[in-house]
Length: 490
Image (tube, rainbow, N blue to C red; front, side, top):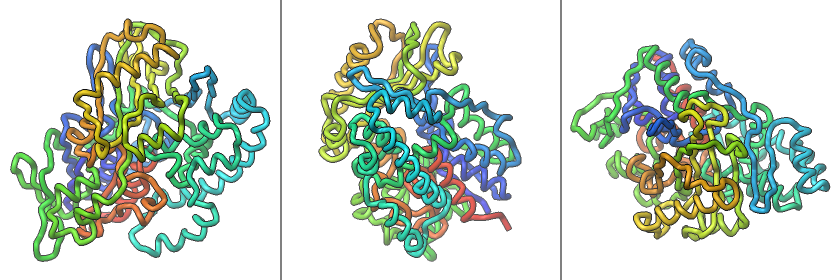
């Protein structure tokens, strides 16, 4: 079959490689001037900044994609395991060094509260079962209500109605430990107070398989997938934005795409790695959408957005690890403002990324390469980013200087930033969301937008907004699901 993949994020690349390997004629259509989608790479002043995802887990999923093409990961990219995975920091100076060594973890727990060690043993035991159920579902399509019915008994048994924070609170009384073992949904666009406890399995995934980094940055993995795809005959069209998915009035099937340039490209099937909300609203005429009407699309709950500063310093801050999770004095109150009230808080929790801790080649000699990410409301919130962006950026710098990085602004020699407007305009993301449909209980599995469109019989979805969800394991698994659904060329 002739297949067009709209967008080249990790979901699109995963699907494209698998489908091309099966014998299909696959073309990736990408709006921007390089592959990657949210995993875009910004290069300036000798620094290389990964634009989006930086935390790699489940490395075997990467191996599977290359293997599908008859290739090996090591021929395209080098992955290295990190230690620590993260430092988790609080304003009072407490630091939790987080890795997959059981004794290290127990010692870190003892430092915070020696009475909580037994709680971790119980949590770890119960997470094993949640992980088993969760990963059995991660590469299985949910296209029928019966797919959901079959797993409901186990989800009830596992108390999937509880949030990740409620799950952590079952085992820990200490608030710091509750936060340390519940923040993970934020990495995939979820609120720890509303994301189903199934997502607590992220901790177990990291414990089993580690946290990894692609030398050269996440962009090196994108380039590796792109090279693999073209090596097996795939075609790529950069700087080509899709204006419309063309439809057959008689049978309601997609016939191809129309580009913004006016060019028409025919296809037997479409794989959309584009934002689900914007795909339905902007690319498919309303008359072909009986399920995903405008009202339905706008009634779904979308993830928060992000404010991200990319900056380079002319000195190194060796006190900071590759990944830093910086938690402020408020946890639930701050998250309520981001997810519920959709207001811009005066304080924040941050994710700080220092890839030069592992790969110094991403910056000039003696320099460090960084990004700092702050979760913020999506554009449902009435925040004027034209006026708020610069003051907010300076607040973040001031906070980092005060607590962790002395004289930071004196040492910044390169800088750029993105905010929710970037997600809305450059990434064509509905309401400027950063992670697609929010991963709540009632927007998971069969209740999430399906991998096979319920309106267009030859339109498939991959990426953060469909099943199984955001994060590299989720989006790469969505590519596997769609590859299996379309199957081999006949």
